[in-house]
Image (cartoon, rainbow, N blue to C red; front, side, top):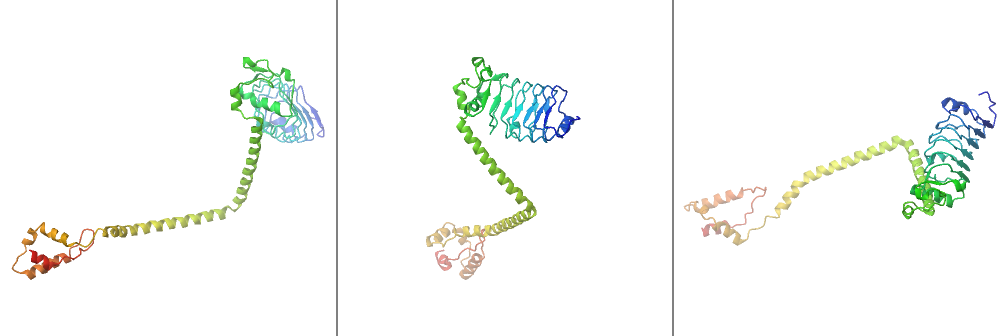
Length: 325
């Protein structure tokens, strides 16, 4: 375009501009624009950063095109935009996040599209909104919009003709005064609750961002942090290994210690009962040599070892046992 780059108002209406990559690159050179009119062109999609360099723009009119998609970052850079006209296009729905960069937006014109539902974006403070000419579905999903229209300072232009198309019971009612079922009220929060939720979200986001910044700043010392974590891991591994070895060594000792409590001094009656129950074993010992018998008995019992590793206590009087026999 052979147009002076210092122009502030540019009207490109009634052309064949599609706002493709080539058109966007040319348009970005007019960074002093305050008003841009693209009325009746061939625009179908608003791509990300379509107006990135036009930070001075205050009025943008893209009415009577065939726009059916607006990408999330289409309006990035338009921080001073005050009027946005998207009337008479083919939009079925809008992502509320596309309006987030428009901090100073005061008028939004969505007249004559195919929108049946519109979710009000957070912190979206308009003065004038134009919504008539859309097939509004006044079910529970539109209750948030109605609450916002009735509690904010925004003016709904042509309110009397901004009517519900669905359901049939509300057809012809203004979307601002349509009576919703009681069950809808329980599904959606009140305006006060919604404001509190928005404030809580902003606080949570700020806290999250500060934590993220701290994490990012700490990540600059990445090697030190990794060395510290490695050292802790090694120390913990050594301690656990030492503990397992200690337990493995001590378990047999503890086991035998517990078994030792089963041994006790034989009472006199226990000793007598033990030998009277099996007298045949003593009868096999020859009576001719009592000393030899005593010696053999002592030798046998002095080296008998129980299965659990303990030497049997020798508290039984051998002479008494021999006399009884």
